[in-house]
Length: 490
Image (cartoon, rainbow, N blue to C red):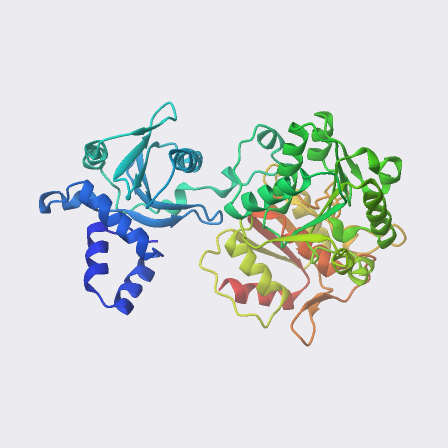
């Protein structure tokens, strides 16, 4: 994204043809609505724009979004030590304005720079400032003008580099303390769904069924566990049934008074004792378990929330069962689908799409977070994976069969987490091996030609989508996959 002089922006809006103005906006990565431009004009008038102080309005980032997170800011201006943030509103209550600036402060504070946060409400011609005590106070425009004059912007800095997505991507499982301490914010879409779901389950007693779905990286787990935390805080009886093994984060939550169980143990609980039951990773539930839970919830007139991604199945049985279709047969079901990708690195996500189908076009702008290693020796590959720094890399192994020895067991140590054990989790760095039995079918889709009890291609997808920041592929005796990876990254 490019910075711009906002006086130049306003004059371009006034004088250019629509196509020329749109092209200028695209060049700077700006998507401003007409009303927002009018609000900006009103703000400039309040700041008493004169030819002698036009440089005060230079080096602004307009409509900036934090990469990967998607968090938006109307106006940002950076110097080595400070950030000036201005939000533009036609009309807005002080409560909403303060809430937005507090959110902005949360994200901008991770840069280590002093943040001066303002909201300008054009209908009232009012400028508000979030003071050091986080109070929203009305200020004279001269306060903002003085800060702009004092600030010395760095015109060559790449501000994208100031933001580390791992600072904001809080997981209930991998950042449990931060989750419990409320050190996170939800997206607008998550907040909307949260409000609707909480309102629904708080209504008079009746059997209610809700589904929350979305692809990898859309924040289902955080949303569902945030809802669970709110229900706990209001002293509702809550049970979370996890369709997989409990991870260390869930075990820690249980030690703090939560009640999270594995699906195999649900028969030990009287479901009628709970106001709300959350079934997480529901795509993995057995049909008879699903039917039994539905009947018990109906009988108890309770609430049941299903959270799942139908693409994240790990066995042929799960794929064939199609639990998504079974859940959608519930007549009273209310469905919410998360669509905003907030927890997946954009480049890694594009790489995964191209890797899993060799006919898909690809255009990666940043390739530094994806690393390729090739080995012709299984033993050397295993040694390399075993020697990786465990504080930096999560080596995820395919879940082995309980009945047969499978080829992929040869290059894994037995200490790493399996595909089934990392369900719902995320890691900054993930290392994944790909052996010679992976290839492409006539449709271009990635498939596995070796013997495996669980669906190897789906396990690979599960494992690779756990990567939050960095991905390391270890390719073993597979020149076809190596060639595809090289072509994607060139």
